[in-house]
Length: 289
Image 1 (tube, one colour):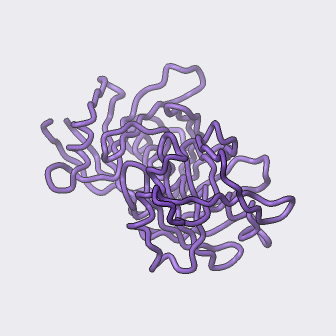
Image 2 (image 1 turned 30 degrees about the vertical axis):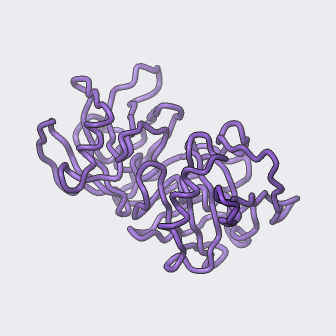
Image 3 (image 1 turned 30 degrees about the horizontal axis):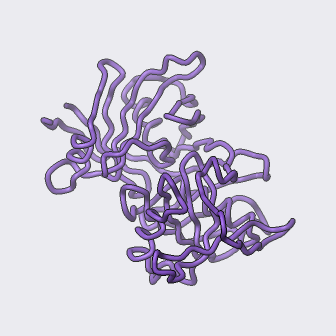
């Protein structure tokens, strides 16, 4: 099987071309491809396919390094558009792509950066999904505020307060004083697998540097901590704006991740979220599965 290795702000991917022949992966094969010792190594596997939906250019599937198929990946979407453009699968600089539960508009900029329309954030608990029954949230921010939900581990030990939302996949966002020393390795797995999140959750840890600038680390569902998470950056900015941490001067926020910088824009509460960042080729080759 031929593959291409790509990365967006350090979030790395194995990209497989399924436009000419179907690519069917089971969970063990996805884990093998993602394995950094016995495979190629990646946070996620992306499978490029043609779409059968009128007006949609491509479809793509996303597998975590755990082998689970998931709904959305913002950094992967950026790599996707560079891949199909530079492999000659399209000459359009703006394309429409469907995932398992979403429709995205992607635009390749003249400087090689990619802008992704990430759609509107989702706040309904049933749609995230999140079970807040019996919990008493604390509201913070303008216009009545946004909820911060207290989480505890099975022994009743407090884990902290999180804002919950979906960017096509579930996110829990926690504010910390310093992301460099935040207990991401300890709290990330506990939040990811918390019973309040029936489909598990991505756990984001955000440090506010200025009203238009944050540092971010994300423990991704099924992948662990990654160098960057596009949907996590969007979720952190949306939560920060609703909680009053961000957006006083502009609703355009620079997000510093361990792998690089992303720019997130949420022009209004009823608008879609736009993400701009890098997408780069690393190497390509063949692997036998």
